[in-house]
Image (cartoon, rainbow, N blue to C red):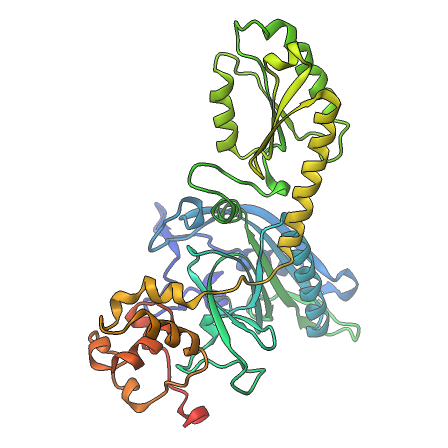
Length: 455
C-alpha cells in the first residue's frame, strides 16, 4: 500500500525518516504505521465504486501509532509509541471536501476551547502527507519544538516552516507596521485536505450523479491524545504540582478521610459518605468525586498526594468535622484554604468549579501570548560578540522582525559551519533570530534569500 501511494520512497534514503520497519520470517517487509491513510483508503476502495448518495463518509479511530523518533524526549510529548485520534473523510468533489474541512476545524476549535488551555491555530506544511491545505493546533510553550509566526497587523498565524526566505514578511500585509512575532508551540492536532493524493493511487472511487466513476476527495484529521495530556501538564503545572484543565482532570473533587486509629475516625466517617452522595447532586460534580480512604496514611501525606495528582478541589474530613461540623476546603487551583460549614462547603465547591471552568474557557479562546524577544536574546547571547550590550540586544530584538537583512554577503556563508564568525555580528544576530535558534545547519541550507522582494 505504501508503495502504491508513493510514500515508501518519499525521502533520499528510500524510506521516510521516521518509518519503523521490520522483516517477517518469510522475508516480507512490515511497517508499523505512523499514519493510516493507506489502510483506510484501501478499505474504502475495497467496496468502490460507491454511489454518491452514500457521502459524505467519515471514519474515525483511536489507535496506537509508531514512529522511529530521532530524539525521543519529554516523556509522552515525543515518544516512539503514542495514541492518536484519527478522522478520515471522503467526499465526492473538492467543494464538499472543503466544507467538511471547515466543519471539522470548527469542531476542533470548540474542543480546544472547552479544554481551556490557550491554543493557536496556524497554517501548516503538508509535508510528506501531501495535499493542498493544512492547519495545525498548538499550545504555546517554551519547550515546544515548532516555531510559530504571528502577524500583529492582520492576525495571520503560520508555522515558520512555510517561510522559506531570510526576510520574513506577512504575505497579507505590506508596510513597516506589519510586525511578525515568533513563539514556540507544542503541536497537538493537525488537519489536511489530501484531495485525491491517496484515493487515486489506491482506487477509491464513487459513482457521480452522471453515472461515471471519479476519485474521492479525502481529508484527514488527527489529535495526539498522549501528547495532549503531556502538553496540558507542561503548560499548566509547576515542578511540584500537577494542574489539570477541568475538562480532563481525573476527578474534580477529592475527599480525604480521617486517619485510622484517630479519635475522630468513627464519628467523622458518616460525614464522608454523606458528602460523597450530596456532591453527586452539585453541578459539575456528578461522577467527578473520589474518596482517598488510604487511612493508614496521615491527612498531610494524602493532601500532598492530592496536590501531585492535580485534583482542583480537596475536602478534608478531620477533627473539626466532629467538634464544629466544619470541613477544610482546599482550592488547589487558586491556592486558597478555608474552613466552612457543611452546607457552605457544598456551595463553595460548586462555585469554585464554575469559576475554574469559566476561566479556562476564556483562556482557551486566546491566541498566541505576547512574545518578549529579549528573552530569546539573553538565552542565546552566547552566539554573539560579547561586546554587544544588553541595550543593543534589546534594540536589535525589537527591530529584527521588520529589518531586511537579505544581502549578498549572507548567502555565500549559509552552508559553512563557521558562518557566525564570517558574517558581521550585527547581521549574523538578526539572521539567526529570524531562522530560529534551534535549527541545525542542514536546515539553514534550505532557506533562500528574497532579493527579488527587497533588492
